[in-house]
Length: 138
Image 1: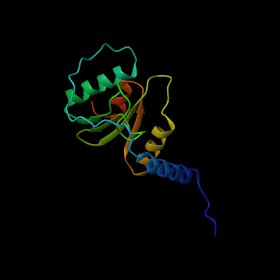
Image 2: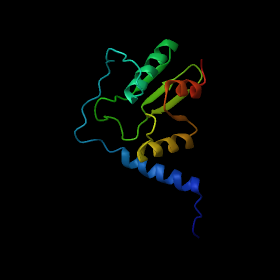
Image 3: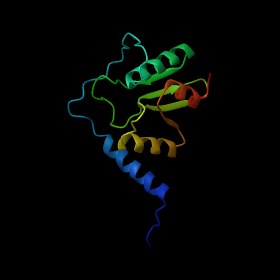
Image 4: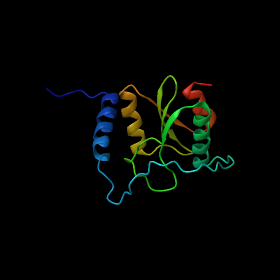
């Protein structure tokens, strides 16, 4: 008997297949460093790296733990990994940051679908204000 696929089932299947493929290590990926770089926070001009810097600043002010994927070099994480994993006082969030007018890659979208299927908090944000309103902690 054949299985009837729903749109949600297709999205979940595609996310699982993609997630399995993304676990392959990059051949020339350098070792990740555990040290945090000094932050020289630039003025905000709407660039993705500036949104990252402001989110890092907000997390620090609020005492939240976060893991941040670098933006200055090719990723050393699995392709599609969200830019931030943030532990607030009430929840853990997976956050993908995008500049206005851009959208997540197919891999980023697939990971987002997969995380939501697992019941995790995932969001794509285009500004610090949007980030703070989604996380919901003032």
